[in-house]
Image (cartoon, rainbow over all chains, first blue to last red; front, side):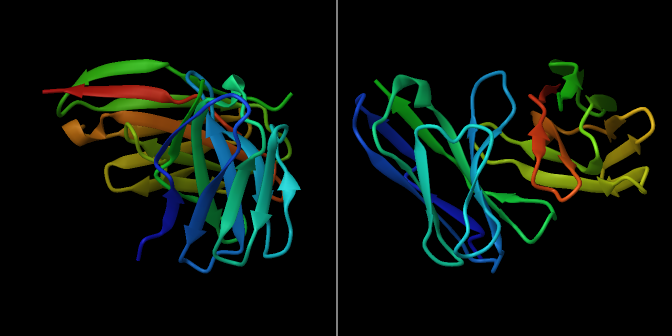
Length: 111
Length: 112
C-alpha cells in the first residue's frame, strides 16, 4: 500500500517554463488536495478536489491549474513558472473531512 | 481573519523529558483540530484529530487537548525519544472542513 505518491521528487525550472506535478493515491479517497509549503509559513491550499470531476480554488490558486484525471490521480500544472513559485509542493488525500494523508513532496526551484 | 498560532517556534529538550506544544486559533465556526508530525524532508503525518465535543485524544506518547471555549489546544509528548525530533503542525478546519488553516509549526529537537 503506497498511500500518496508524488512525482517528481525534485525539479529545477527556468522562469517561463511549464511543468506538471503528478499525484496518485491508492486509498480510494474522494478528496484530494495540493498545498505549497514555504519557510516559516503554514501549508497553504492551492486547489482541491472534493470528488472525481470537481475542482475548486484554495487560498493561493494564481499561476496554477489542476486536473482530477480520475479518482486516483490529481495533477498540478504550472503554465509559466515564476521564481515566486519556488516551494515544496504536497499532495494529500482524505475521505470527507477526516485527516489527510500526505505525499513525500516535490521540491521545486524556479530560477 | 482565521488564524492558527503555534508556540514556541522551536524547542530543544533532552531525551526522556516531557514537553508541551501550544496552538491558539481563531477559526470560526470550528469543526475539527488536527495535529501532524512532519519529519525533515517528508510529508506531514497525522497524530490526532478532535472535534469540538472532544477535549483530549491520545496516540501513544502523544496526547492532545482541546479547549473550544478558549480556542486553545496543546500537544503533550511524554518520555521524548530522538525520533520525536520533527516539526509539529496544528491544523484547524471550519464547519464543512474545506476552510483549513495550517499553523507554521513548532520545530522540536530532542538531544541525547
